[in-house]
Image (cartoon, rainbow, N blue to C red; front, side):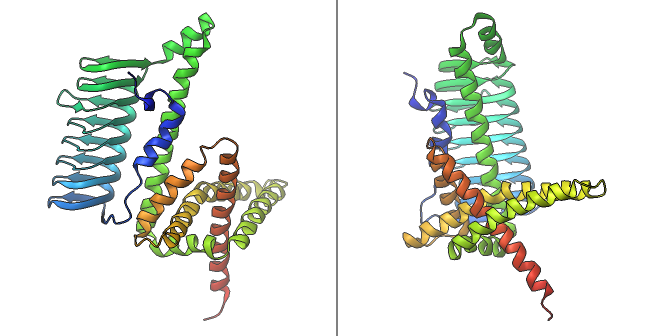
Length: 348
């Protein structure tokens, strides 16, 4: 029997995000360096960023983002990795979620495996206890999948085994166009959109974690403005977007102003892109205060991020929540920038 997570593609993002929620008592060890090499075992949850990251000692769980990632030691719990090249050469006790230009899985997985990238390879040393979802330009499976193996790829090679297998490819889309049978085609693209949405959510989650690590003071201040002055922040968001649009139109009148209009447009796009991260941090802090949780900003951000993304999956209401989150986050960033400019103008 195919598990529910593989029957309803629209729910895959929500289900995976739910699994990302940490416990309130979770502690986090942060490794932040251009060249990170872990050689000492850590009986804790590890968050690591850097250009090159090599994990050569056991950890409890691992969230890692970098250019080149190698995990060569066992992970007791879950492993979430995003990078240019991701190589997992050890056993993972929980789930594995990996995304990158190249993803190699060469160890056993205690629960589920989700991997996406330009090239995804599941090696013969891999045994996945439950289900696997693989998506990429080129996908190779030589491992043993006890549950359902679902593959989305135009180039899939399988020398391994699986309890059951579902393959979605552009050929199915072509056949649907030729025969007029859209049901199969719709299912394929539903899975593709679900995987893309999941990867986008994970990408933003990791970006948010990195920004909080790099700029803890600024993140706290910007997130705090949403909680302390929600109405003013909302007004800043609405006014900033409308005002920015008007400025862009006025600058486009003259040839000289076109480059400046593009610059303003890019700044507005960057602000709105980061707005959800700001609102997630504020929501996490709000829940932490209400529930009287003692947790780091990273943990509160993860909780807020997961909850906000789950709420946005609700039909109709989710769109309203998305708009409010965008305006609040944008307003908080505009407000912080305005206060920064004001403080610089004040003589020392």
